[in-house]
Length: 141
Image 1 (tube, rainbow, N blue to C red):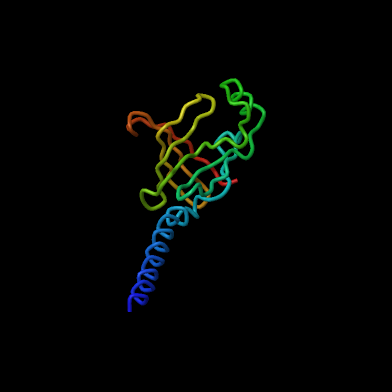
Image 2: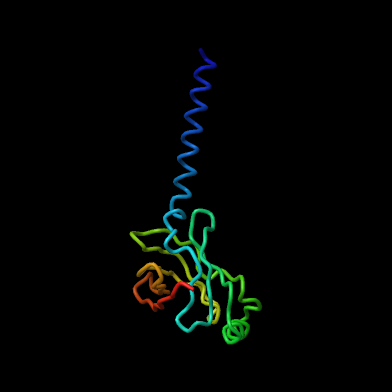
């Protein structure tokens, strides 16, 4: 009888663990619309978005010479591979919140992403807890 309770307990533990793992991965699964490669408005940088744990992040996969020089002048030796979009979690339908790293300023800011359509993202960097923001619309590329 005791052995049966142990097995039942293990089954419950496995179910709970599976549910916890699924819920930890749910935010990333919900990000499928924002997953991909995105180009900034000036066409100088491309960022690849993807999972970083249970969050959404984005790394520079291409940058033109001007963007690389600007980053180097600000102390970033290698712009390609730099994580610009950091630790985003969903806040609503097509909306995300996290941090954005701005290499030419050498600073990280509170940030919001709003998917405006299948091929465009509005990415905002904010100060004062999100009261003052500057936004760019990035295109899928």
